[in-house]
Amino acid sequence: MQKLKLVTIVAEAVLEERLLRELRQLGARGYTLVMARGEGTRGVHASSWEGPNLRIETLVSPEVAERIMSYVADHYFADYAVIVYCMDAEVIRGEKYL
Image (cartoon, rainbow, N blue to C red):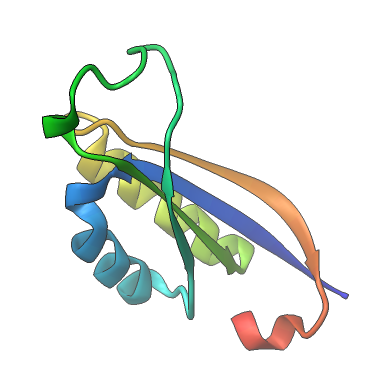
């Protein structure tokens, strides 16, 4: 078992291409992306013109996780509806993610 970090980003779908490109540049070797719905401090999306949210998950080393989380906070929090969080993960075949 390899100890890694599971980094999850929930963001506006308009950011998809940009976020995926930046994740690779920051060291992520892969990701899972799904459309997401939910309610947070700003409530539920009020209309369809806002578009869906997406959830991106990536398994990375602790160092890459820190880079991703800092980058997302620095570049997106002020202007976009984005959250990012990180959890410990134990992964079989963990070398695939490093």
